[in-house]
Length: 307
Image (cartoon, rainbow, N blue to C red; front, side):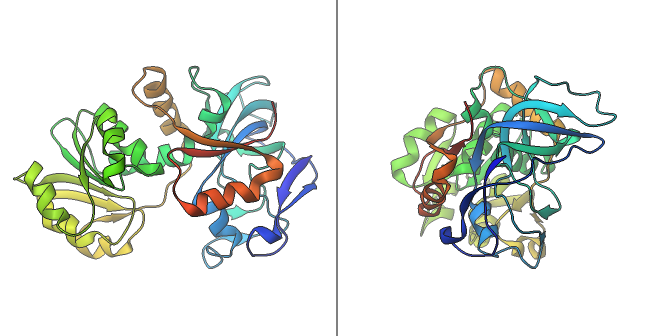
């Protein structure tokens, strides 16, 4: 099969379009013919060796953990899916090797969900990792209609999903972003505030009694979180482990087919949109990584693997 892979840690120079064996399909797994795969910052951070102390790697490694495609084959005892099913998945394994920037990828059936009917392949590929990160953060914090939620990094890849999910859960949402992104946040249902010096005062201006939930997707904002969090409030971060010592949760998103199905319902009900900023072919994965490193796109960067 055609794939993009690397045989050592490094930057874009180690990426190469190559031919690799088609993966085998074990019991409880599905083989997905990849249509689209989304880029996340973790992809190029893993390639650079950033998770070397956390995850084992087997070279050649194919990057990519987000996928949307068609079930090509099912393994033994996999009644949940059948060939031809249109699906998506956060396809991370416990080690780095067979990722989604390839024509085929095998994924545990428990981590797969049917593709939202209202989404195209590119949008569906952009949903799993970022959407599940937001969903798991908010649900673990018990977010509901009585909450006032502060989202740090509300205009970012995960924050955009978090705003929409929190609104769908019935919460009032305040989101930090640069002024250029405030109208986008208002359109998603959030009350925007500019980040930077004086942020706590601006949040208190909107919520004088404080907020009940804080979801941090940028890091470095713990002091602000604690300054605006109401007594008994809950907070979590995906970017700052110091929250653990301050009564919060430090989170790492898990693959979760049930969570993906819940997100698919929100999508098909029109309560969750997946913005796509750029779509590039497999051979231009390096360019896609460069766009991701720059961090200025408003939406997912997607690799189109096949039509």
